[in-house]
Every structure is written in structure tokens, then in C-alpha cells.
Length: 260
Length: 161
Image (cartoon, rainbow over all chains, first blue to last red; front, side):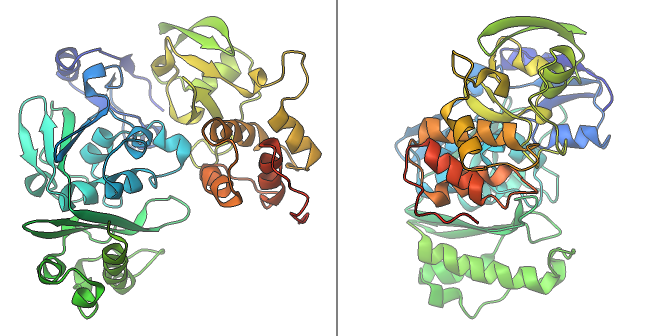
């Protein structure tokens, strides 16, 4: 890997100042970025670690909102006293050692098309809080590895409204432990939201037909005869477009049956 | 280069590292703590698992500079005070939990991480916790058996495989 300058500021203002220089990049837990740099697919001149910023750490549950600091690790979300759909998702990312380093902010900023957190954020209608503004999940995800984040902008927190019931189902690609397909189902008073990761060439998306059906009747039967269009699905050696499209329906059904 | 100071296996250690110096490179190349292995260098295999501030981490996927001021534990610090093998290490020996031994430091560190939070894990919990530790020789059976034995559970009913 090419060398770079490593800095670890202790507050958001100092992190933004450090990121303002050219070829600087923010570093969360590095569980994606460090392997990427080893392959020389990324070669920042400066890395700004966000893990020294204490105000970006931790999970707070108050009323019907879970607020997660952007630099909070997956392990700390998994262990938090939050709703089971969220803690279950966090406890299934990667492996235990990866969960002790990887962060929710890093995952959402990278927006890997097979990452787990984008499905949770989109299905719950989360708010992505940055140093300068608040972005609704529906506006935040803009396609594979693409988000609404600007060049010098840090995810300081994520606010998630607590659903009445929720569940995340992941069909794991056994070597990478990423989602071959992952489905997050979240039921709220005003309707059901379903977000799919791992499947689409366009990154995480909402399955609107399933949402409409489940909002009327929250049961497996409501979606068992639905299907998603396979034409935009990812096709690779792990699974064809049609295989992924079928998994979307199967996993949505399992998520509905398991929702609590 | 920047100066870092880390408490490694209870002892304060200082060094000078580049930004890109991985924690495992600092341990192995600068401190000669070669018990921590590099199997894949791609965060898959877990041979480089150590504890950073008390939790398991893949030391090939963390920069040494990130650990400045932290407490790090490696396989070299796992033995008992009298130099004998600790109960996890002894169980790996007793139950033949290794063949070539390359993955063993990471397996022992992951097992210690598990047992700290779950003193009597089930077989399924052990296998799930070892998700990120790959062994190419043993087929895992005796590793799982060793960890169960290290937790004080009866393993006499588990057949040798």
C-alpha cells in the first residue's frame, strides 16, 4: 500500500479541517478501506481517523428514536438495548473481529451494494445526520457506492425511528460474509417499508409492491405470489439475476414471519 | 513517521511507524512478536487476531498508529504467570486442536474473546464465534472440542473426528 499521513482528531471541527486538504479521506474502522488500499484501489495522501471523536460514539435510545453515533462499531450496536431487527443485523455483519472495528458511519458512507446497514437505514426511513445537515435515507442512497454525501462531510450520527416490528434476513455469501441478498422489513403505524440490499445493480432499493401488500396484510401470504423484476439484478458467479430475484421474495417472506 | 506508544501484554512499548504500517507489521517486524501470524492479509483468515483494548481485532486490518495509547494483548502474553500454557492453550494441546498450527494463535485469541463474554458456550456458539478464523487442516472439530473443554464443559461425549 502507498504511504499516507495518518491523523486522528478528537473532535468534528478538527476532522473537517484535516479533510479539507486534497486527497484526504475519512477512515472509520477501515474494514473495507484498508483492504482496498492494500490493493491500491484507493491511495489517499492523508487518512483522517474518526474513531478518536468521542461525541460520535455510542447508542442512545430515547422514546421512539435510536440514535447511533457515526463512529459506533457494529459490536456496540449489536450489544445495545435497541430493537431486535437492528441489533440482529449488526450482530451478523462480517465476523466478530470485523464487528469490533467496523462502524455504521463507515458502512453507510461507503454504501457497498451488498452491505447490511443500508437496508436497515432505508427500511426504517432513518435520518443520516452529518456535520452540516440531516439527510433522509430516501434521498441519501444514490446507487452503488454513491451517496448524497459531499466531499468534506462526515456522518456524525444516524437516527432510526423504532418500528412496531422488524427483521433482517441475510443470505450470506459464505466467503465474503456480505449479503448475496439481504432484506430488512420494518412495520410502522403508517405502513410497512421493505429494503433490499445485495441484489440490485443500483444498490439498496425499496420493494414498493411488497410494501403496499404488507401494509394491508402483514403476512407471508400477502407477498408469496409477488415477484421482482430480475433485469436490474446483479449477476455473478455466486448467483444469477433470477436467483437473486427469487431470494428477494423468499427472504422478504422469512423476514415477515420472523418480525418482532 | 510518527511516534506511538502502546501497552503490549502489560508492558509499555514505544516505536516509530509510517501511516501505512499495519499493527501486525509493528508487532512482528519492529517488536519481533512473531506469534501473531499473517495468513491471508485480506481480513478473511483470522490468524492475526489479537485483542485491542480487550476485544478481538484483525491486526492486519488496523493501522499501528490507530493503536497509539491503546492496550494490546497478543498470543505471547497468554501464558500463565509461571510460564505454563493457559487453560485454552492447554486444551488445544490436550484435544489436538491443531495440526500445522498456523491458525492457532488467532484461534486461541478468538476463543479467549468468546470465553470472556460467554463462560460456557454451546458448540453452535463456538462455531459462530470462529466465523472469522479459518483453519485448513483440522476440520474444526477438535478446535471446538478444545474450547468447550477450556470452558470446563464435559467433552467426553464428543467423538474424536
